Length: 341
Image (cartoon, rainbow, N blue to C red; front, top):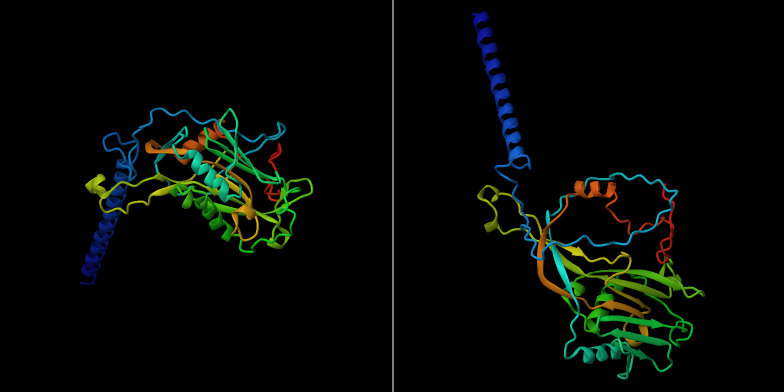
């Protein structure tokens, strides 16, 4: 009787083990099948993107020629991944930047912006369409190119009466970011890409050589540089109605917005030098650079390289080093030719 019971028990155990192994094998088979169906190796059911599909609406776009920093020929740098790339969209918007068009009120608006910065309504215009202003002491100048819609304001710091006065800046450096966006709105540049843009601020001190250095505290600074970077929609997720029924249960990704950088990523779409509380633009703004680009919002949607594809191109010489500095470098110092090891 005992032997019979032991035999029945061992039989049941074997059945349970076989059932468990069958379940495990079934789960592994299903997981393998799902991975295959969602992989590029499956030609019958290609992977479905949760972002808008590329349409190449602007046609073939050549790769931009991005200036690269110079590295000493004696350098022999090696590069490696330091972390795992986060998930990223597989398609992105590409905007067309149109040549600025002069409107009926272009000059009128320029005169208004100049007045906000402390310049009179009187200006001189060169043959190339460059409008120029100077203050009464000729210590501050402003230029507006009516063809390119570029602004450039400069101050002769060792001549200007306001620049010669003692100065103080706020210890709340972050407050200057919102002040930068506010300055743009006050000057009439209130596009959403700017008013919602990313703004950064750095303490600055003017040296006797006329160059700025980057002190660490407000007590050591005379000025603050503000850079406002445009922020544009970069990628958009599909609607529920645009994805297959098999994916209706998945969480849709969030839309992405991207920051617009120049060839020198330290310089924003708008760059300015200010001091004090910036409650009087005629007194507190010393430099201003801005290009009022015309963005065509009928953008095209283009496929994005995967991080691995981009990394492969970098290793083959297809990348550009746009900024490299040592940790002790001054923020305002130009990037020298570096020996990278």
